[in-house]
Length: 271
Image 1 (cartoon, one colour):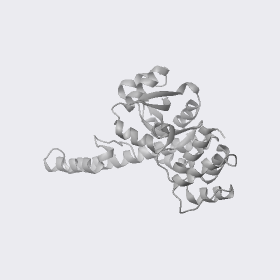
Image 2 (cartoon, helix red, strand yellow):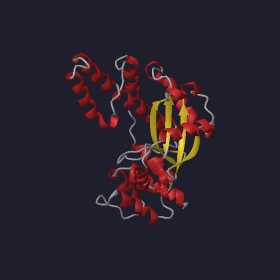
Image 3 (cartoon, rainbow, N blue to C red):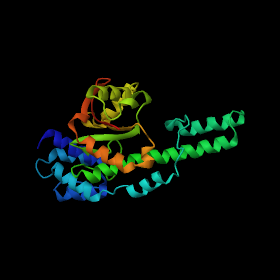
Image 4 (tube, rainbow, N blue to C red):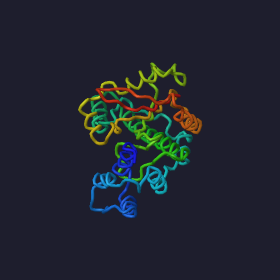
C-alpha cells in the first residue's frame, strides 16, 4: 500500500473517528483492536495491514456515520434578522471572559452605560452564533456536495475534513479591509501573500506542537473562505455556499506556503 495513503488512513483513525465505529471495523478486517486502546494505538495498527484497508473503505465508513449540521436551521436564523448587529466589539475570542470583565469595569468607571454594556453582550453572543453557523454551514455543505470528502465522526481536533486527499482545518472569516477590493479576483501570488499574512506572527513553538500531533504537518493545513461582505451571510447564504463549493475544486485555489520552516497546504477562496 502507498505510504502516504497508509498515513492518511491512520490520520483519519486517530483524529477523525470514534471507537464505537472504528474498533468493530478494524476487528472485521482482522486487526486486534479493542476499546481499551488509545486512538493513537488504533491508528498504529494500520502499519501492520498491507492490503485489507483502503482509503475508500475509510471514506465510506466515516461518511456512513457522519451527521451534518442542520444547515436549513442555520440559514433560517441568518436570514431572520435576529442576529443583525453581531459584533465582537473589540473582545478577544480567546480571552472572552476577561474581555467582558473589562466592559464591566468600563461601566463602573462611567465610560459606558449599563444599557451599552448589555447591548455589547448581546452583540457578542450573536457574533458567536454567526461564526459557528457560517463555519458549520460551509463544513457540512462541502461534505454533502463532494462525495470523496472524508468527514469527522468523533475525536475531532486538528482536522475538519479530508478534501482531495489533504486534511484541512476550515477557517471562515471576513476578508481583511485592505484586501476587500480584490475579492473574487486575486492572483495566485496575492492569495499566497494573504495566506502568509493570516499566518503572520504565528508562534513557532505553538506551530511545532501542532505539527507534532500528526505527520506531514497536516495539523497546520488551512482551507480559508474569506467573504468581503459579511451581510451576504444574512441576505443570500446559499449563493455563498454555491460559490465556495465550486471554487475549492479549482486547482488554482490550492497551493503551498512555508511558515517558520513548515510547508503547509492551503486551499484559498475569497468572495
